[in-house]
Image 1 (tube, rainbow, N blue to C red):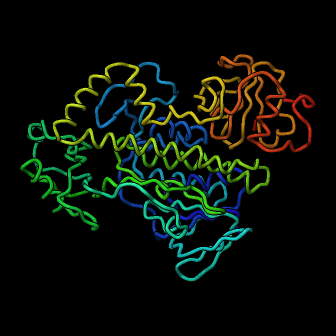
Image 2: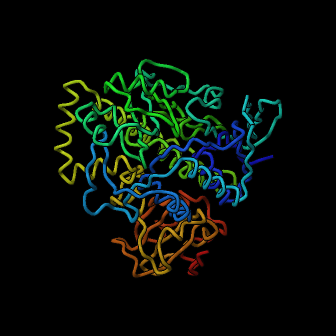
Image 3: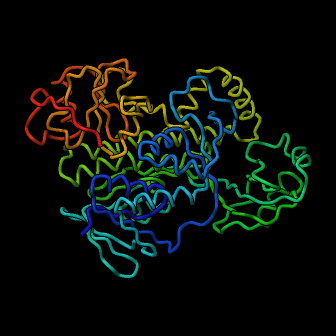
Length: 483
């Protein structure tokens, strides 16, 4: 019997598996495809995702295969430089092939002990008070305490669970791909100038261009080179001599959000819980961030120390985040319309983004570093993620690699007491904080600030369950050694 079965081994499923394995949860990942994804599609990792990769010791491996670009809002493809003083040590965009991300996360999960089975499609499941029985397409039945659907926008887990997926269906479709072109760059530049925002040709190597063009009609079939030629002719009057595609894809503007992220022992994450147009490049990032939010909470439930409502905070925290992403993609799509009103709004927003405050607000929205979970009244830092800062033992994010909580203590008087099996403690009077003490959750969000031990104990109980020894902070003054 497994503790958790995950349906789907994309970035969300692989990241979730690794997060669970940090806490010795027995994990099986089921992937219906027999081979890893081979389409070399370049995606962008935004600031918050880069921070999470740094927290888990994965960033350097990804940087070897990616290409850094300056941070910017890129809202509705309005390319503005980043405002000064972006609140991150990783204030850039990393363009990287999606198969590389999946491979690195899979290898990370396997290294930590997760099992991954390919060619294993979920066909059904039943849940009871003790767990979930999962049936595969070949008739095999598996048992786990929890099931998580990370199986994409057409999620079989979500459909079988009966969770509503309200929103808007696709009304238009867009073709995207990387192709070689048969005309010189100056001819491309002359043709592209003035064509509306849903169309672009951007150089992506020697005579290779990233092509984005509105499709002619709707189709459920994978696109062909002829589809691209027809669409390019329709909007630009020429097909630019495109040939030799590296990859081709089709996406619609369907925008949907699951009613619920959890029903009993079955949960949803990533595209299984939300789909939207790729405006701003937020989809993969949103799913990975779902996984990091859910992982430690589900592990706490499995390991038996979770406070009663902890697992419910996955929905209360992540569902509103997805709602905001869906709304901002709707706005970006509207701003990309060739209609006169939309073009006027776009010109106005372009002017407004010259103000640093506007530019920063949109950048923080797109890159997810502006998220503040509702932890009740408190200082502005409460509920936000803490940026990577210098600490006595190096860098803050290096101390979060094991998926545990962390108490940063400038006073030297605080302690994690009976929670030291779940929360590390670093006493460091030099740490650059405006508050005497900070309690970080395993996902890096600030759960408490202050210098009162009793108040800290209350918050340790709220997020990390009952004290293991029955002792509270005031009875244990030993600083926990960080691994």
